[in-house]
Length: 189
Image (cartoon, rainbow, N blue to C red):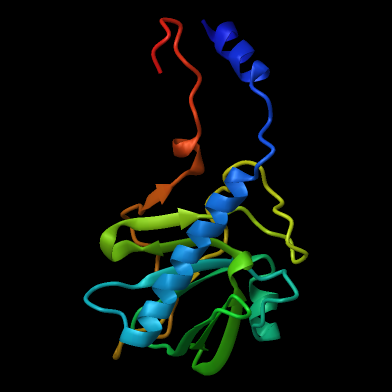
């Protein structure tokens, strides 16, 4: 039975349409809409965002000290203390002001630099393939969890230490769930 499935997969021609790329782009658009909504209306209820992104891309604008501390990937938490949250549709970038170690700074993150997005309040999460600064995606399989530690912002009265990642795992949407499955041996799909 295993060899039959392998034969079916080998006989299927490769797609000439980049469905995976289109789906990934649409899901990055979900993040853009969530950020734009939060920028216009604030983070309502218990909603808060974990945003992971590549720091080694030249189009990611962050202070050099943060790039040195997080040379490949970084996760920020937008919950209590941030300012100037915005989504720029023309440049497809997220902008936000945050404090790191008590020092305020601005970050500009292109959608293409995102590796993950989560809203733990509703158990929602997305993972993305890394996209090189030139626009080509660099991974053909789902990425492993981010290696960078989330950088949290303190609530009033809390020390300025990174917050741990929520212990409840957000629901991650995999593009594999939407791929066509080969028919079973009895002909059912």
